[in-house]
Length: 562
Image (tube, rainbow, N blue to C red):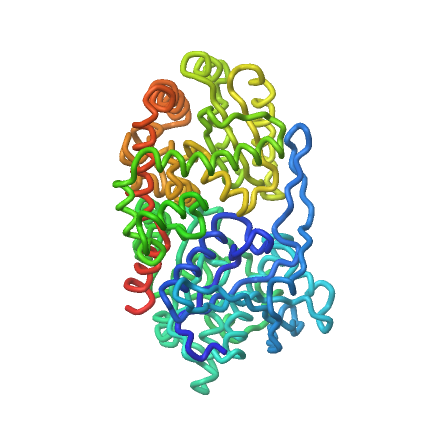
């Protein structure tokens, strides 16, 4: 089945459909977009992920905004095709059986990429082993390490069982799959008939591996104490032989395992490359390939109709979106009006906030964790009230889930709810959409007027929501971090918050309010044609570059076939 595949793309999560909860957030959605563009390009790729039968979590918000979680119920067989092959991986001394379910991603030219979801929920496994494919990023450290063994070791074995013997590259999208390095070394020793692996064997495996890091925070990288590793992986021959090579500071650090054994390593924006290089050290050269989005997936139906009419072939040639600079102001405004009307209807039905189409609407959605600073705009409610009085009414639509164990993120959502209540009657309307997913993301990134992004620099590795907004003519108002350092042309494609990526929170708050009151709101309400000109430039200048077609082409030339 996989005899023609040359690239194996490994990711713990892959977002393909909202009804398939196989993703938690941006990492998984990026993976899905990557695979779509690879299919469009006809790349000989296969993708490997974990099957989370209970998903990441279904978010439930009470009247105060406090988040609780519930499992997501979905019928796997309604979306995926079970394959008959079985492989086994030793976990805590038990042989855990693994099967794969297939999903086909078909590109614009008809090329198909198989996505394999690995599943341990089989009757021959113990109940605890069956649960390994229940929750995405769930459980304790032992659960997480066992899942990563299924993905990395089990994934390579499943590729072999399906005929994937001609693979040239193994692309690790984050460090979760880096145990595949151990399996590749084990295969090599078996093939050579030698009793142990050596540094020379590592040098033979390194050219096979590609690693993309997304996390600019050391604490965000999976690492496990050696006693736990020995317990979960047992006496795996290659790991025991090369323990010093694989471990960093007496721990198995999955990021450093991938870093040290990949021929090509990249960050996901130019600034993120600099941060990663400082964090990892000069011995691990890091390049950059800035993220993108799959344009045909994220453009609203109204925008797609406009593009089809004015730029035939844009789906196969994303760079041609630069011709959007020739669009008439009125046709951009009308296409956006349709998307905004759909968002306002959805918000009013879900929240009862009673938003209006004619009011400037800011959208903001991301994982609810403290460094994302979703609540930054509510730092001075009295100032927000004065802005509404002086510059016009304002609407904010926000969304995003906190990790089930992230109480700080949950408290941040509560602060948004408190601000919403305190702002009632002030001319500032606030709605928080529960249970953010890909469908809500499509509505929100297409229907907002301005995309708000306020992370704490330099912790935004890249960010892709603003790219989704841009292709829909929604300019960003963002802190200078991640992709926006590359995408912001002030007053042309959007607006920056602060003049430096090193500004502090107080400076960002003041700059945010000033830019809203004195630049964006007057432009929207009093000079709307020039506001729409910024929308048009966001499509042409940001949409034509920040896409996964360009991104995948860079992986091809820099990493896959170099």
